[in-house]
Length: 204
Picture 1 (cartoon, rainbow, N blue to C red):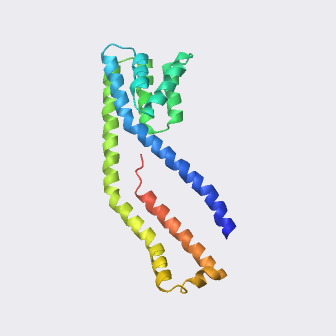
Picture 2 (cartoon, rainbow, N blue to C red):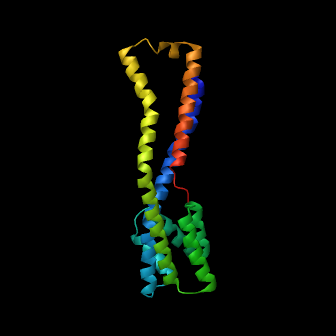
Picture 3 (tube, helix red, strand yellow):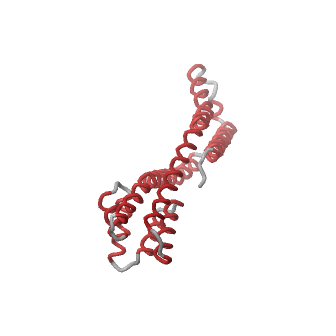
């Protein structure tokens, strides 16, 4: 059993850590994307070319927007078109908001039109989506607290029983059938936590 749990932990823990880091990176990116789009709008309205406006974002924006837009600017400097460069941005940050930005830039480059107006509308959409996510997060906070309490309750009860009656739970640890029951209980708790987590997630 130790080997099984060790292998499972060795696989799941790094995956969960990377998933957490990826989610945190995307959230930080989306927090700053509306500001970056508005900075591009101001540059375009001031008469700057789109490339120079994006270069300004790459120089003055916060991370991680700064680094990602700097890559876009660097790719243009080695011969890529702006459409190709922003598509590569979606490959690094594959979220719907970045796809919206790519569509606006691509359509404007191919069909023309008022770029500042299109980007202003995009900025408004991005901020509305950000507000919606914050609202969903606030509404789901109670469910998250309930899930945490329910998930931790068996562990708390086991600790309290062990403190008050030290030998009461020993058969669960010292016997094969007890180990099997512990493994089943752990699996069911994991499945229940996963289901509750998915129920309170915001799907785009």
